[in-house]
Image (cartoon, rainbow, N blue to C red; front, side):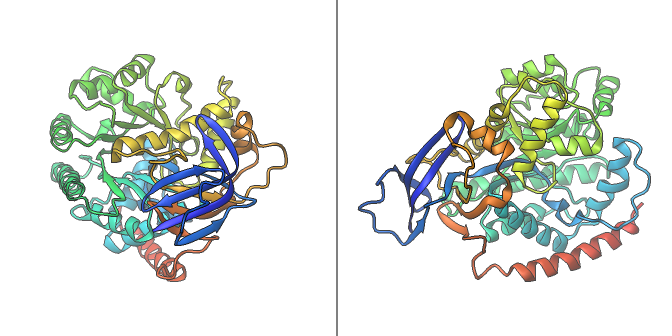
Amino acid sequence: MTIVIKGATAVEFDPPGIRENCDVVINENKIAAVGNGAAKDVTADEVIDGSGRIVFPGIVCSHHHIYSALSRGVMAPIGPTPDFVSILKNLWWRLDRAIDEDVLHFSTLTASLDALRCGTTSIVDHHASPDFIEGSLDVIRQGMELIGVRGATCYEVTDRNGRDGMMAGIEENRRFALETQASADKGDKPRLVEAYIGGHAPCTIPEEGYERMADVIKETGRGLHLHVAEDRYDVSHSHVNYGEDIVARLDRHGMLDSRTLLVHGVHLSEEEIEILNERDSFLVHNARSNMNNNVGYNRNLPKLHNLALGTDGIGADMYSELQTAYFKHKDEGGPWWPGDFLAALQAGNRIMERSFGESFGRLEAGYMADVVIARYEAPTPLVPENVAGHFVFGMNAGITETVIIDGRIVMKNGAFPDEIDESAIAAGAREQGSLLWKRMEEIH
């Protein structure tokens, strides 16, 4: 299929760029040509009028919890949450134990639709459902593929529900990663969902778990996706039980490389950040979640070579996430400006490149056709030097009109294809959300 976007303003994020009256030609799942008059002699299956619109590469949410989609407005009694560990025990570890296949299916559909509405084309998911482990990642993949969202998923390995649950989580990661690789080797299309090897946090993974996870990382060639140092408790636990820093422990097991995603890292030391930089690993910053959980602020963000942005399950609105990250940083007296955070957002496309082995994040020939068309009437000149300023102080998720992923139109003028029954999905999600909350009441 060939799609042409005619006469739009092409916007690049990092390095920033603006091209007026630009055509974008998409052939199959890649961009074929970009430029003034690039579509002149092209016969297209679909022509989109881009006049008065901006077009830009797809946005990536580099850390999400799709399973949390039905926690919105949760009515189950939570209990006291005076500290971070209490929040985990009284809310999230009860919610994830109440998840079954139906809840996860509608969570995935809901989260995927929400992402498209926000112009988020890729989700890097991190999953947990202790009473539904085997096959859970397939449910997420199937839901993402149905809606047409790109991304990756993994299972959150932990021993908090016993050794058997920990080993089952490791095996689910292994199975899904190997099947994903087999599909890639066969050249199956569309190839939308990749695999990571997931873990909850160092404080709930003993040495046996690390050793087996390290083996699976080596066997599958997939990267680690792990929360680290979100709260000071995680740091103290590592020192008390293992006599070393969190990152040093991971490095000792050979678990850090260019595909590693560590998340939060609020309380990592400068020495640990140096190791991450040496291993070319990523840290994913989740500003709104950190503020919501009152876990502190990472003042070392500017020292990271690979910093990306995620939501930690608070939807997939990366406009709100970036804006919050920027304003919180300035409130803490940080030196970064909007462009630095827009570069961190764009870094999510580097994560996609390392996951899929393709080019992402540019409007250039040969890049994957993950593209967003938005209506943004700039009230002041829009030039390369102030793209980030417009993103922080003017744009929002509501400007999204049309989303193309892997060369397929998955949302057009704010509407989904006929085969996606948005009302039925919402009704199913409400039903499953009520059942989820009811089961939470029975879990203590």
